[in-house]
Structure formats: structure tokens, C-alpha cells
Length: 244
Ligand SMILES: Nc1ncnc2c1ncn2[C@@H]1O[C@H](COP(=O)(O)OP(=O)(O)OP(=O)(O)O)[C@@H](O)[C@H]1O
Ligand SMILES: CC(C)(CO)[C@@H](O)C(=O)NCCC(=O)O
Ligand SMILES: [K+]
Image (cartoon, rainbow, N blue to C red; front, side):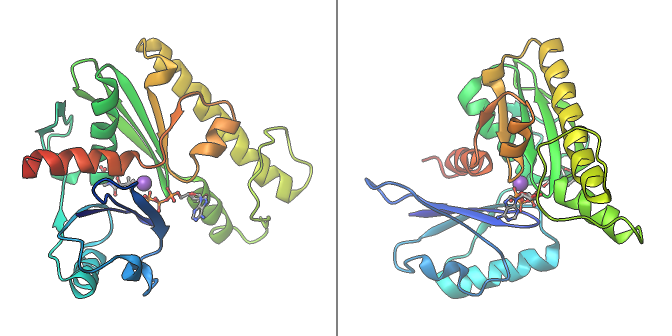
């Protein structure tokens, strides 16, 4: 069976699909040596990967998987056109494979104009029109990266880790920062909503994924939560390549 992997900048998500049995899924971090020990070495005969990690980290992941499972993994990258979706980039190979696979996962389901919001380490927004043409997107720092950049570039702005869902003005450093990020993400939700309406996209065609997606929904962003959207697109791409 095939092992599907989405290796992001922070976390790695995987899915195994045994025939006739429910899929096995998991989340981990690349530095965990136990990560792949859960897989039965006998039964995995193909590994398909979507990744945005550095070339060094990618080579390491390749080695780890080969050692653990005896299978050479196949890496899937952004193409100019695939599975009905056409990339807007002049240089498609420079667009993150996670964005591409998320778009394909969403297109496979919706087959109409749609938005994908991936709120992971970075937050990305991508637009597809009703013909599957990618109309471009946005890349922003994610919630954790925004907090970290504030913390590491100021001396006196110190605050707690807990996320806030309160966008009201703060009256302490901690509340100013935490509520400030909520306020910003609420503004982002409003922008996304305006974009969606301007493009005539209904709520069911807004696909939300990534660790911070539930938080965005709590701040008012409407859409469908699809935590495994990248893996879903990766599966479609791999099926097209292998002809299964
Ligand atoms: N258990 C968790 N571990 C890490 N991040 C988490 C967790 N729960 C929520 N988050 C939030 O999720 C965000 C990271 O999302 P996600 O796990 O999708 O990242 P990622 O997939 O590793 O990132 P990317 O794919 O963009 O590299 C962080 O900004 C953090 O606020
Ligand atoms: C933007 C991220 C980090 C989101 O995971 C990833 O898709 C990436 O590394 N992209 C490369 C740059 C681009 O997509 O244009
Ligand atoms: K991601």
C-alpha cells in the first residue's frame, strides 16, 4: 500500500490506506526518530511525498524512509498543469508543493471557483476560478511566526503563549500582543470573506487547513475545515501518475 506524507516546516502528516480497512493517519515532527516505526515495513510498497522543507532536510527524510521501509520515496512537485488545475506562476516549480496539492485536493471535490486557506507555519491563500485556473495567492507569516518575530526583535514586549480569541484593545503588554494578533486575524477573516463574495464563491468552496485553521474559524472565518487537504491532493496526483 502507499504511504502518503505531507512534510511541512513544522510538522509532518501521514496517511496509510490499507485495502478494505480504514486509513491510518498521524502527525509528528521530523526530528522524532520513532516517527516511522509505526509503519509495517512489509506492507508499504510506495511512498508519495509533498514537501516544502529544505533540500538538506528532504534528503534526510528520503534516507530515513528508505532505511525504515526499504522503499524509495517519490516526491511530487508543483506542475504547470495537473489534475484539472493550472498554475498561475511563470515558474511553477517555485510554488510550494503543499499549496499545489491543497488546490488539487479542493478542486477534486468542488470543481468550481474556490479558495484555499492553509494556516500552517506560514499562512497561504490561493484562488482557483471555475475552470481550475489558479488566479494567484498570498503568503503571510502564520500566528506562531508573528509572535516569534515580535518577541525576538523587541526587548520589552513579553507575552504568554496561549492564543487569544479576544480582539478587544489590551491593557497590558500580554493582552496588547495576544489580542492584537486576534484582531489582525479577524481582519484577515474579513478580507477573505470580502474576496470570497467578490468572486461569487460560496462558503462551501472555502477550504481551510493547517494548525491555525480552527482558530481562524473561531474568529469568524467561514469555510470547510479539511485538516488533510494536502494529503487528499497528493493522493489524486499520485493516482494520476501511477494510473491507479
Ligand atoms: N500541536 C501543534 N503543534 C504545532 N503547531 C500547532 C499545534 N497546534 C496548533 N498549532 C498551530 O499550528 C500552526 C502550524 O500549523 P501546521 O501544523 O499546519 O504547521 P505545519 O503544517 O507544520 O506548517 P507548514 O505545513 O506550513 O510547514 C502554528 O502556527 C501553531 O500556532
Ligand atoms: C509558503 C509555504 C512555506 C507554506 O507552507 C510553502 O508553500 C513554501 O515554502 N512555498 C515556496 C514559495 C511559494 O510557494 O511561492
Ligand atoms: K501546511
